[in-house]
Length: 326
Ligand SMILES: [Mg+2]
Image 1 (spheres, protein in one colour):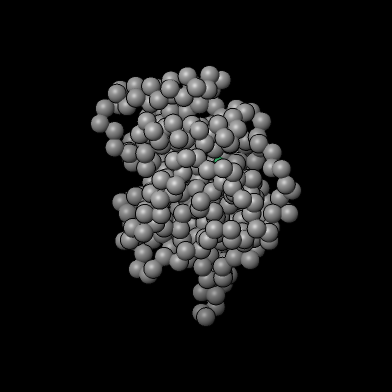
Image 2 (spheres, protein in one colour; image 1 turned 135 degrees about the horizontal axis):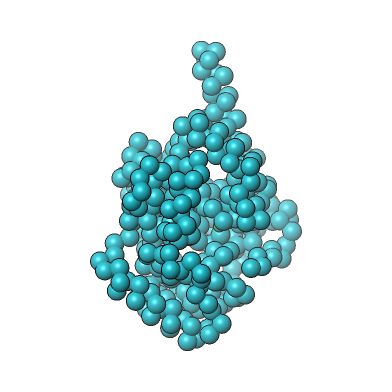
């Protein structure tokens, strides 16, 4: 599948105001109001007020102008999207795996947070040097040493749930007959996917509205569109896991990184205060209510390695400082 092309060279996006977003979905004010309400919820994991790094129309900061080494030294968990964030042209590289091994060796938990299906993620969580992986945009999580997934979305009856998702997809297909169910949909538990193909932004916004009218959520990545339960997103799933599984790690000691609209909740500072977008996020930032705090200079997996290098260097400096007794 061809990837959407950024109409403006990436370098020209730095240091300039982002263009105005396209015409909003009629339901968008309602949706954004819901998001704004959510951001006011007190986060029990934080002992200090959350600093809002994002403001409308603000400039995106290059990662090279990021926080002090002290901040990176305190990172204990990296929540990362997979496709377009860890991959390069759709593949894992040896450089990526080496960086993941080095981060893990320093005790940093790597948590993949992806829209991929439960079937995909079950395998990934056991084969990669990571602590675990969240599947289906926050639907469930596989932890490295446990075969059974942690279900993060409440589903009373799995059969009825799949039937309801199929009915919503049928409604969308009635209006957009070109959409095709994704090959991995059979391996899903909480959501329903179809290929993004050549859908326009206006068509995607229209689908978002239709799903909302039917009481369901909608998101999309560079790969697929997702029909999902309302409120199911990567950011809330991550926070849920920090409160139940990785209880020793606060959001302030975590960082999130992603590349697509379905990563927007990872950029929401009410969940994780500091986030990073790999450079390919720049083709979507005008569509996002929540933008990443920083953006890497490199795209895709090379951008992740840029962040990894910053953290590994800071941890190395810390080790040298500790060894010298200062
Ligand atoms: Mg992605």
